[in-house]
Image (tube, rainbow, N blue to C red; front, side):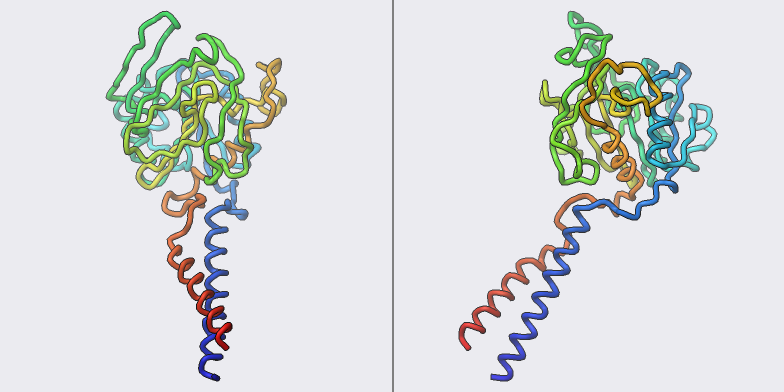
Length: 314
């Protein structure tokens, strides 16, 4: 009887211990790092030869609000090696064609930067630049134009397609509803089910088959990917067709443009969490997922069942 009691107590203790471990691991997988130090993150905003005033104004205010170190860089800086000194490269929206400025040399430098642990955040034109190829329809009556430039970054395994005339004509802008597709990711875990985000000529993402891409949000009107993220080598990539950097109901973005529109909610928490995810090494992401310790769970359940049976036989 003493042997059975000792055995029962041992199994019960181990079961409780394993449950605690499992729940702790699962909790860690579902949460962001509360001690993350944004002040150590170096963010650079790419400024093209034809900078877009809106993004050149909004992003510095956003990054200051998040608490990161901030600088602006251009194609000459990138070719001179400045990417070695930063953690995240933001390529904003605008009408300029980035591949013309940066060319093959800039493309390879950015690819190597991300592959070695850096991060890329692309918005609208900056997202188009990150694709393998694009399909652009200059007017609602025009035929789509397919482009597959050697200078495209080719970070995203798929096609960027736009603009989206179901949302508004081009050129033009409107607020559009984005449906959050998953709350099991660091970037979106604390967000509401929907966001209302400023849109102006951006695209959606057609993901190639078997591409390892997380669709964070879709355009509600067309049910196509609007915001995505993925790993590239040891680094991270975040792409957005719409513009969550604008705060239409608040002046903290430094802009009084578009304030006649109703933003409904702030989109900056999305970008703060995206910056944290981008700055987190791809092999150490706090993405919500069941950890590799899942074998402990069935073992724990079996142990509890065994304890109950032993106790009932006593």
